[in-house]
Image (cartoon, rainbow over the protein chains, first blue to last red):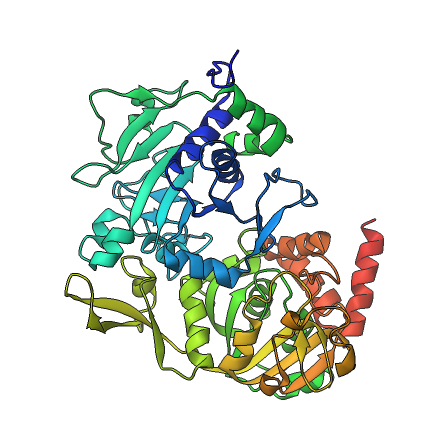
Length: 258
Length: 287
C-alpha cells in the first residue's frame, strides 16, 4: 500500500485533523498558529507534509523546527527562533499568520463569539473573552474549529462578536477588507467556507459518517448548499502514521469527540 | 522593603498595574498583601490570572482592565467568572494586542496608539469610551483610514515579580518570556518589584545574559525579596506552576464555605512566610 493511499478505516478525529491541516494548504512561510489540541495536530500535520515552510510556536516562547508531539512537555525541540508573546502580536499585525481558533457561537457571516453568552454586561455565562480575535480577524487569515456542531453553536446571531465576520467588515477600510479572510470552518460534521458572492457560510464537504441532512438540521441558520456535495477526504497512510505515531501518540485528540 | 511597606505606598481608588501573564510569574505575595489590607475600590490593569480573580473574590477591585483572565491550565479564571456573572466589577475588556498598545502609549507618554484591532468586533460596543481616529495619510486607494485609538493606560503603581533583582531595583527575568513587565514599569507613575532573590549587582550576569536585564532601576521605586513570591503561578526556572494548589484555589469559586476556608488559611494570614508555611502543610497533606 503506497504512502498516499487513502485509509477507509480512519476515525472521525483523524478525518478532522486532516480537514484542519487542509486549511493551511498554500500558506507557505507564515506562522501557523492553531489553538487547541485538534487544531495543533492539524497544523503540525500540514507542516510535516505539504506545507514545510510554515513556522510554529510550541507554547514555551520559541519556534520549534521539529515536529513536537502534543502532550509531551519535555519533548526535545529544535529551536529556530525566540517568540515571546509580544512578538506574536508583531507577527499578527504583519499579516504573516494563520490562526485556527474555537468559537462558542458562529453565524452565517462567520461572526465568532468566544466572549460571553447573554448580555456582556452581566453574562449568563462568561466565556474566554474577546482574547485576540478582534485583532486577528482584521490582520490575517483565520479559520475556526467547532468540535460540537449544533444549533447551539451555529446560531442565527452571536451574543457577542469577538471575531468579526464578513458583514461586519464590509463597510471598513480597504486594508481591513483585504486582510480579513475566514478561510474555513471545520466542525465534527463537515467543512465550510465563504467563497461566494453573498459571503455566507456554505458547505465545502461532508465528513464520512455524516450527511448533508444532519448538517442542515444541526445548523441554526440557512447554510448555502451547493448542488454537488463532496465528501471530506480520508487521511493517507502517511498522514495516519504521523497522527498516530508521531504527533499524537497519546491519542489526546479523542477528547474533542466525546 | 517588606511586602507590607510596598502596600503602604498604595491608596484606595488607585489604578494598579500587575505584571506577568495569566498564571505565570504573577506578584502573588504582593497581591495577597493587597487582599488582606484596608485598600478598596482599586482598578486593576492586567493580562489577568489569579491576581485578578483573587482581588475580585475579596472585593478589592472596582474595575478590571484586561486582555484576558485565565489560569492557563484552567482556561477561564473561575473567581473572575463569578464576578462577571454577578456583574460585581466594572470591566474594560480589550483585544490582547490592543491592551499592549495601551501600555506602550503610556510608556511613551502618548495620548493613544492607533490600531485596526476592534474594528468590526464588539470591542467598541463594550468600551463606549473608545474613539476612532482618521489617518492623516491617504492609503493606496486615496482614502483616509479610520483606526481605533487605544488611549494610554493611566496607572498609578505597577507591581512586578522578577527572578532576580539588586537592591537598586534592577530586575532580571530568567524564564522564557518577559511578558510586558518592562512596559508596566515604564507605563506607571511608580513601580514596586518583588523577586525570588536579591543579589549583588556584580552577580546579575552569573545566571543570565545581559538580555535578561530588561527592567532597569530607572523605572523601579522599591524592591522586596519574596522567595516563592509568585506561588502558585509559575516562575521558571525557579519553579513551575503548583497545579494542585491552583486546582484547590479554583474549586473554591463555586463553594462559599470552601472559599471562606481558603481565605482564612491562605489569605488572611499575617505574612508571606505564614502563607508559605500553610502551603507546605497543604503539600504534605496532599501527598
